[in-house]
Length: 377
Image 1 (cartoon, rainbow, N blue to C red):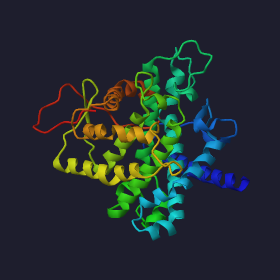
Image 2 (image 1 turned 135 degrees about the vertical axis):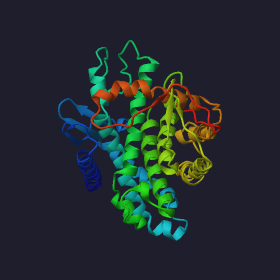
Image 3 (image 1 turned 45 degrees about the horizontal axis):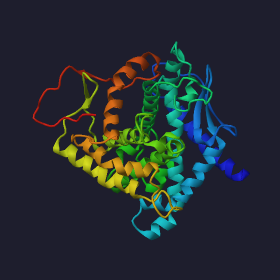
Image 4 (image 1 turned 90 degrees about the horizontal axis):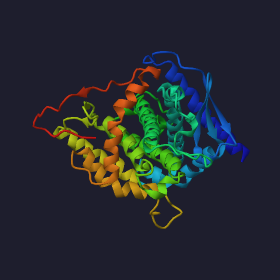
């Protein structure tokens, strides 16, 4: 047990050290961020995963039990992970260890970067500066203390959930464009530095493994929350909304659909060419579908109906409608639109607290009709 945990801690510490140094060296930094370190806690509940704490100097506090549980879960689903890379059963069996090493590095990297972007994205300082807020950042509006008489409003919870989604999407973008994943490069036998620039079969495998890594991380964190059981957006933003927002970041980088603009209500729009539609369908068929079809519950004979993956499959058709400019039909589709529209207000609020230059959101007073369909988010 001690040797296992020592190895797990080594993976996390090496990931943090490499990623934080890369962030500090990035030219997009507007100002030097405060000191940051990583620590493991035997007291932090495994359901919490990791959290950002501190005031002047900051710490990413990782639940020891969460890190161990994640390590073990990856080994339980190793066959599914290997199938995302290799078609042959022989290769899946003989190279499974390499796949696990790559996925663990990616999964840990995503969680670490998620917390890093809470810091350099200005989330922590923004919440700290709110004069009427009774919340600390670590509570994230998601876990209401039982002794509280007044619970936060839906809009307050949704704001905090949007911060979680932004940290997810920023981490994914960083992993695709900036991070060098050594284990993944070794597995796919390539010297190409960044996943965004992989080609052919390597590109398919890399996107699948990174998407699976992000999915497994969010799945473990979201499945621990009580709100998952209710599947009711009247109480709390749906966990599938956070997942679909992350998938959207993958899609944008896979398909190169990036000329997104925003209308006066905050709805995202872009003109889809025939090539855009084809690459969206390719992403859905060859990247997203294989990941979601994997057996992530090998100990269960059937897919648990209350599981996050069961909810994803239920809403997947509407997610495709959303991407292809068709009317959305479910609460998940409508919530994606609602979260997208909240971005302007949140971006304006966060701008002065950010440590890096974020993408500018350009408003459109009205949508010009070009004869091509425009995407509404």
